[in-house]
Image (tube, rainbow, N blue to C red; front, side, top):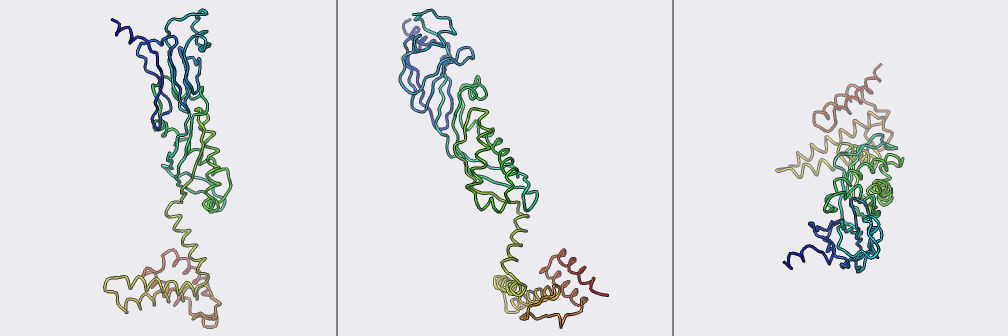
Length: 331
């Protein structure tokens, strides 16, 4: 009989949280809290007393003995008379205010933004972030509710959705070109963190850190930028010819059974490509094999360019554009 009665009262209340825990409701299972019970709240924790859905009293870190004297709001809600010393029932919830670190975020789908230089772009990005509880009431009302516990893992899908929206807002309103953003990821990280923090605040959370570890374009757009960068680095058509010849030699040498003939064919194709492009563009370089004084017939140039299309050294789009230009010269 004594053992049965002992189970009906709780005289020690504490919480040993695990990494990632945000909130935990003490499972009393129809038991009552003994008047004068010991409440232990550890560093980084807060204990809440909730009566019939109303947030009553809060206790910060320390050792507390529970009675009507240090539960004034709960005492008022339950209409206790002064000196009332019976056991009482109440929901007790522990919250952890520790920083939740090392969380990952990423754009599941590309985010479309308007770039100052390239127009509409679809960007992918990923990185890490951290957060913690900052406001009790919105967290209890909008996140905890009647749940028995809340963890960082259970909130991650919701937080990542807010992050993706914040990324679009931060990048779309900044007016900073993509190339400048990619070159200064620290400033980009801080800009997005501000927007993320605004979104998190509705749930009583604050974003303490936010890092952009990588930001990239779709593969086809990146390939176009790489091509343009290569041409700018090469500088002129004579350098381009030498670059193509070197590429051909390397490719031929790497082929199984590669021969001098194969290397020679690659060099010839690269040289013909550079010469044809130089002639078509009216190259003024004195070192080049063509000059305005020895300009070849446009029809012959078109034939050479067509051979390069056959060899795969020139795309059909580039050939069509050059062909239209050369035909316009025939009077």
